[in-house]
Image (cartoon, rainbow, N blue to C red):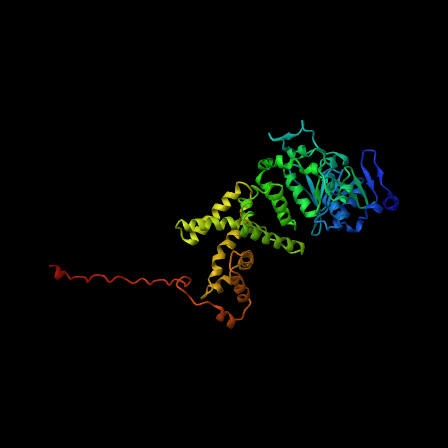
Length: 450
């Protein structure tokens, strides 16, 4: 306790250089208080330091606090091995195969703890034919751990005990200058992991930071390397982008850097067409607003929105070829989903939700008889209704349809009866024809046959 108090009071009052090349930035300069750190992260760093290890809050949490943003989560880096971390915290578990991490649980709060890693030399690293690193699983020290991180803004270490920040790559200055800069040679780093190109776009759009020219320049030449990234990893990165709270800004930036081609089937084509672009923009901005308000957002709804225009075009083409509307819609949905799987591995668990929202869209046109009541009872009505409103706002569907359903779902019994449209030959439910037995021929008697 005395040691901790001494460190807290006399830790440092001005920046100082470390023997290993790092810089220590004091609280008096950066103003990031220990109070901004989550309870779980403080418990982890305090516990590890009390056991004789180094422990820091790292990465995006430190960056976000310096930018006066609320971190989504708090990760901890330490010189303790996963087994040593596990011995310090009873409620923890070791996870991962490629690189082992420890999850330490405090009620609903889970803190991810990683051991310092080092960057592997190119000649020693296990890579594919394009230079992408396949295995990177070597423990290291704090300086080495900073060097292997992607951007200078993500390579900061915060000690909640002393409230000092350890900086090895001028990340603090870059954050203050609102600049996103790659650590090391950008061409080498992108070849090691092409997903860093997408991450640069996402962080730039999310944080409002300018990508350093040297970091941005190689992207145009190296974007084809993204084709070598496993589909599941691409999906994870796309999901982070779409659920960042700044999805529309991300998509605009992807397009400006010509990175949107191939991310989702025909997304580049959709963004060139007035109705398609307006629909995608409305869907993304609606999701951004929900996330920024702390509300849940559905990935299935998002992907259904992004793929809808292609489903619509394919559906119309099949109907023009003579197929009936409903079978044509089912075929169009399957065709579009199968096509995207070759580029972006959207998990099949989302398929059912997306298809249900899509297949309910034609039913909103049916506003007579019992059909509107049956649609209201459907489990996916609300999601499909929100989807309909986006179609109305984009100009794809007459706004009167959306207004009708907005009123109908909350109206009383009398008003609903008044709102129902008269049945027509086109929308009236088909009556089943009762089968009548064909009268059998009279049975002749034996005597007649004789």
